[in-house]
Length: 430
Image (cartoon, rainbow, N blue to C red):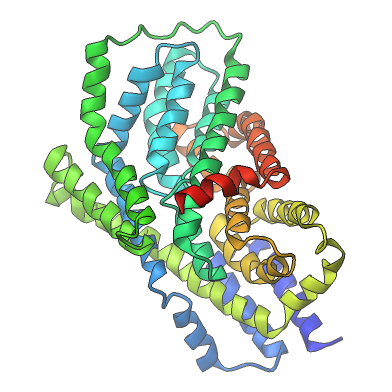
């Protein structure tokens, strides 16, 4: 067997073994990379260390800690609560209103933080007790909130697009702009699915808010609603880069939370910054570790082997996209979003380029698939977050999320069949 073939076996077998014994994903990637280096006769601790450091030595990746911080500030500083209150004032009175509130709030919060876990935790903390009190089925409610939370990595600003853009060398600004409408399509799919599921429920909605109450809720949320417009228009007109947009989001959230809403002070900020730093360290170490494996995957010439394997599909881009999406769906059941992006991107991008598929279009579909993977059992980190916050069994949350997950996968495959759903509005936003 050739060293390249042996390296492939070491990579796949090593990852499965180390994941099976419950090892931390970042450490598993480093050890697997070391094993590949040994097999390929590239064993050099200095080279491994250099690639580990080089993996996060990237200016665009600076956006990640600032978007994580912005999400923490939103949830602790009253921004998320005011967005949910405004959505409730708008649609809370209609049949199934709290579900539509969850979807609307998820879209608005997604345009500010880019973190599925942060948005889901905020939505679940506030809305699940209200939905339980009004008598909504808890499994369906938890499934809806989990499905709404994963819109965050798709609508800009998106941490997933930042990581993919760095790994694939694709414009992050274009990815941000191309993600707006696909994120809205996913939200629309949730609206119709929720409507269908609760159409026969006899739960009495709360009374309609008066016009004065609606306007007051909008006034209180005005400062929160300004941020998405700042980010989108700033990126569209070249006022700042995606990394600078992350800084703007964090600073703006800090200003609104401390000066306008006054829900945060110095005493509360210290643990908040520590929490954001811990989350950031986990993500960045994972990125660094994955870059070691990505480098050795390239050395082993695995992308060329994959291109050769998929050669019969290169003449049919849509069929190729379906095959890649099915592969990503399978991987997403076992891996979290960030390692999936970092491991598959260097392998799949040569295939995508060889087939003549627009890298931005592919990036949007790839991130959508990975986002849905966050609610795909058995790993499903967002499912675990909802189950923990709502004190609901994992099996109940999994059962409740299935209809919404099917609807979102249907939208994804619809965008494969009709790429115009992604690229026509994306070119306008460019």
